[in-house]
Amino acid sequence: MPVRYQDKLKRIGHNPIELVVFRLLAELQQIEERLMGGLTVGYILKRLGMWFLTIWIGTTIIFLVPRLAPGDPVAAMIGRMSAQGGFVDNANALIAAWRAKFGLDDPLPVQYVRFVYNSLRFDLGYSLSSFPSRVDEMVANAMPWTVGLLLMATLISFILGNTIGALMAWGKTPAFVRALLPTTLTFTSIPFFMLGILLIYVFAFWLRWLPPSGAYGRGLLHGFNWPFISSVLTHALLPALAIVIASMGFWALGMRGMMITTAGEDYMILAEAKGLKPSRVFWLYGVRNSVLPQVTALALSLGAIVGGSVLVEYIFAYPGVGYLLYLGIVNSDYTLIQGIVFMLIFTTATLVLILDLIYPLIDPRITYERG
Image 1: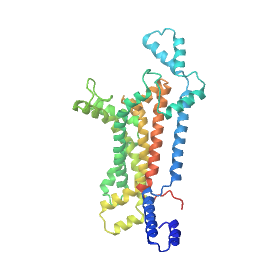
Image 2 (image 1 turned 120 degrees about the vertical axis):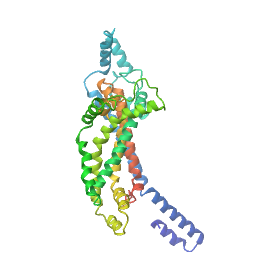
Image 3 (image 1 turned 30 degrees about the horizontal axis):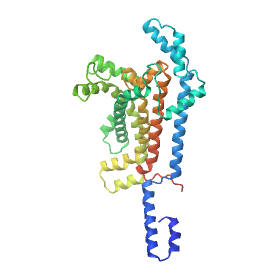
Image 4 (image 1 turned 90 degrees about the vertical axis):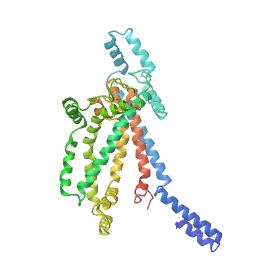
């Protein structure tokens, strides 16, 4: 029973009605504290403040970095128009008009305040290189391709990598399995883009089993029909395979280290002494208590999905957010770069906040109350 109710009960004496009321209040408070997992209002407010500060600092950085790079985005756009059409009449007047249209001639403080205000309203503005297309529409069109590809690849890599790492550290793993597991991590030291080039050469040009680039075949109608769905899956296989193979070792090595630490814990020794099945001890006692740091890393990885995998999507010409970000960098498209990176910062910060608040529900040993 909470200490603050004990003094009140002493003052109540033997009044049965008040005694029952205060006992019920004490029990309700205990239930609430268990459900909150030790969270306090002060801690929640502090984490919300850190979340807002993170987004504000990130927004400031992505405003400044593109403007530190050399070159004028409007002049670059006019240059591309000249290269395509041969001549642009009144180029200087057109550049001046477009700079005024996008507010690039305003003082930097004015541009900064306008950018922060629009970002907080999720108004990402117009693309400089693809006007009159809006950045939010361009990101919305590319997001399903990136999320569909990277989400599945990340989850598959997370499951396979953690399982391999846990089996490598588990003492009861058969010797031949333990000898074979390290071979599955052979290619994890190769960067994404190098592995992607290797996969394209082997499976697209040599064996001719899979297409080398794109997201679906030409001439197919978009929709829930089997030709389109099968084409999408076929085109996503190579980039997904590059991500899974290259990132699987990261999860495996982290999980192996955590499992080695967990193996000597008292609850593991007690579980084995009770005669529980080895599979039950492995999954419910070993893996369950070792995977929490990996879940934190997974949350950060899922937040980064919004930004796409630039090199993988570029190599495979996959129409995701990463490829869109690459085009924005090449074309000096300030608004497109800022919009994509802002979504990345917002998503990552929000996922970390949610994970930090639900950690006590995942592991009852974690509490944010002061002792």
